[in-house]
Length: 351
Ligand code: AN7
Image 1 (cartoon, rainbow, N blue to C red):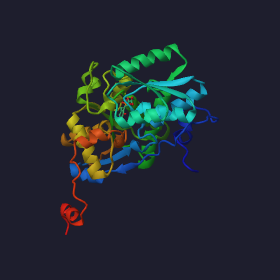
Image 2: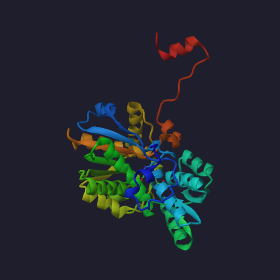
Image 3: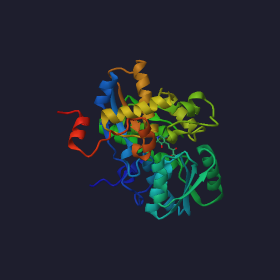
Image 4: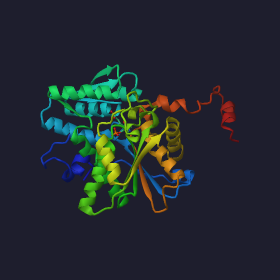
């Protein structure tokens, strides 16, 4: 059977009946790549796998949750959908709403959205409202609109989003033949770490697979869970995780405790360095927020945290093409030459 998206693939694990009519863009089924070059570069004892969620239809993991949330919104006959977003949720909501023929509204922190994500929301036909405030302000407004109207919230506070996102764990277990020993993720609103943990637990209870330890990483200037305190003015180059008051805070702490994992920080420069390293060694261009999962991994490797028995999966949550500005700032500019064979050969430094 041809692949037909995460709802059809994992229907028995989702809160739908057989007659569900999925709104799908064939999300999921993303590459799980063994990162041998990265392993050598880092002199890591453990195996490293990268789950590249940037290969989803709108370029991020949000699509797994959005197919489920929008399918449910259609089933419930919602009038429209709305989300607050640091960018990827809005791109995904706008695309799936377009496919469903629903209006999407997105509320964004002005000036803090990567250019590709904003372009996506607009071209998919969402009504985009930028506010003079941060993500946390936007989410507060969205929650109130959800309470007062028949407009469905499709942020990860919508449980259908979490249901869809947990399918990434299923794919990893199916590909590896068992669970990894550790799973590393960037943490913003903490919906994804909540979803992965739910997925690992549900698979374990049916198929007796072991449970991994969950490793979460927040950006240094936006690390409320690490510090146990709301951050009023979160800042980081990884705008996707510029969040000071995560919606799924409690669930994330529960996932970390239950799995005997840990959450810590990655600095902006560690994040950007990891982004370039992943691209240069493995040929994968992820966005800065995504690279925090590898930046954190690098720190733990240096602390001697892993052994040769460990198998670590890092989720690369979004595609680097969404934020070319940030990526180009840290790398050498192209060389330039007149339109002459000799001059070009000279620059190539090849005989
Ligand atoms: C690339 O789009 O919150 O911890 O509004 O875009 O589940 O929030 C995005 C979050 C990691 C963090 N990596 O995931 C939004 C939004 C990327 C992201 C996260 C996000 P959560």
